[in-house]
Length: 294
Length: 168
Image 1 (cartoon, chains in turn green, red):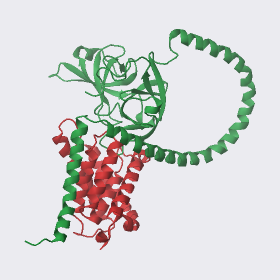
Image 2 (cartoon, one colour; image 1 turned 90 degrees about the horizontal axis):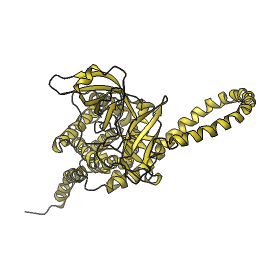
Image 3 (spheres, helix red, strand yellow; image 1 turned 45 degrees about the vertical axis):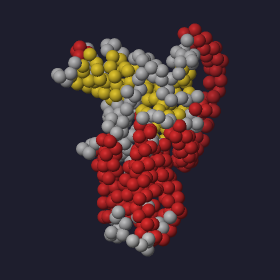
Image 4 (cartoon, helix red, strand yellow; image 1 turned 120 degrees about the vertical axis):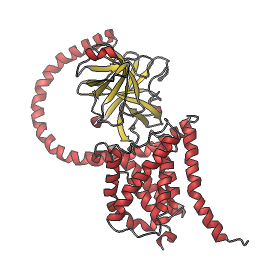
């Protein structure tokens, strides 16, 4: 048998793909058993930095184009507003008194911090999952801003505070959030009026309805179209009484002891730009107890 | 070879960023085209068995960091698709429209099969495409339609992305 270096080299080239596939499987084996969280955190930190840059660049271009059109409008508005300003200056004195009184009342009611026992950290959505199989939202705040894994994320839209999801990975300057509609998301919820409890799961798509499972069968006669569903706060990473969705349809399956309720999310996820992370004020770490992902 | 892998990885990473930040506005029923997959198919087809899978593995690993997918998921899927595409190297010539469309659509189905294989292997922990669901077929059609344009744009970059051996 003669030694042929060309054949050996070709054999080496052919071995590359199986070796890489095996390396991928090794990574998967480690990551799915959650033995190591460090590579993900490092990856999110490093790659998230550039992702923020891309998002900022896209935002800059669209903002510049918008600004040109807006400048014309602003000039017109400026004259009108100057006239109004004089009237509002007079009103401002009265407003200052009202604001001070409002602040005092809020303090007395314990609402100064928003949700009791939580501090809100504002963040902007900068990216979404590059693939179509998983649904992730990337926010521009990370560990350095106080974001931690499993923190609940909410947003305000049309005057309603609704649940967006929870943090699954926090990098230094960016964090990954799994939204409510993701298939891996489970939230302990209750019907606000009827007080029946259940578990709300995502269907995978932002436009697909959420499904509330394990609701007692007697609820089928009480639940009505449009009823609000909010977080129950039991054994969960999510604080209580955050709106999740509204009843769209009740499905009664004869062979099951519970009913399933389809919900329309209270938030239009395609329109969300800014969100808030709930940081617990007490020493209790976010994510203590169950909830989130089964 | 190193240069080809390096530039391919940079381009694939750029595509991943574009997909995650800018392409949301052209999503059809929440589905965006997988530009990185199309670039990877082109690179693998042009280069052969080493450069494509290497680029797929590295860019897939990077994509895992940007996604909720477990580490190694996209690395495996992209390496598998790149390996399949690299087997076509030198088998036929790509025209301007039809074959790019076919490669884009079939590449998406190969991606779905690889993801399905992993979903079975790691039962319950990973997610696979629903073969009867509209998302997969929309993505396949979207990728098929985007492929001719993307392949056309990639042609001038042949010197950077394809090895001398691949250009022969």
